[in-house]
Length: 222
Image (cartoon, rainbow, N blue to C red; front, side):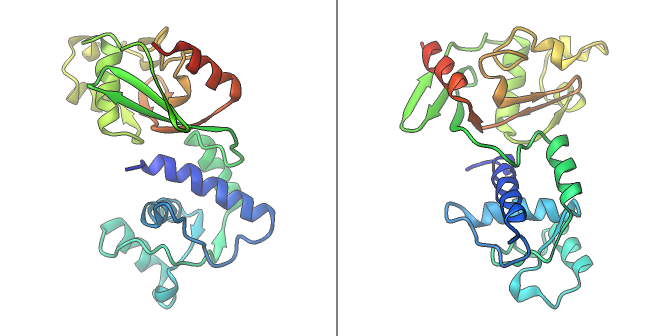
């Protein structure tokens, strides 16, 4: 199953393209790969007050009731909808805060972590097995937990509660520092698959790579 982050990236690209060509205020064309997952990503943007997009069969329901229903899980997500309002400035801010590139282009790469230690990158029909993460080291344990919650931003406090490592309890710990020199850290081989701040960590299972990034990963396979 693809993560909500993956679908947010796809929806962001689709919305931006339709805004630039003047067709954003129209019936949404559901993605054929997984219309339900795409629709849930649109729900995320609706909750953030970026779009208003009632399902076509729900057009008479007041929007505040729809938002309450989405948040509470009272109604299923509806892929058949129409964009009736779109705040482009708020959309761009949301993309910047969440590391989304609405003009993204590149080569699709997918990440799997096998047995919590073995990164495998799939590009097209090919898979590249990379050097294993150090077993029981702090970055490996964090990545293993994040992979179980792929696409979710995880706070340092959450990691302290769920990853049993004494070192994490130190108040001076900094996730950017923890991942310094790691493949998922700054300038690391798999940096594109992680969004790391001092106190938050997010692991992505799908990213778009440049040709240079793709070449480096292919060269680094075991």
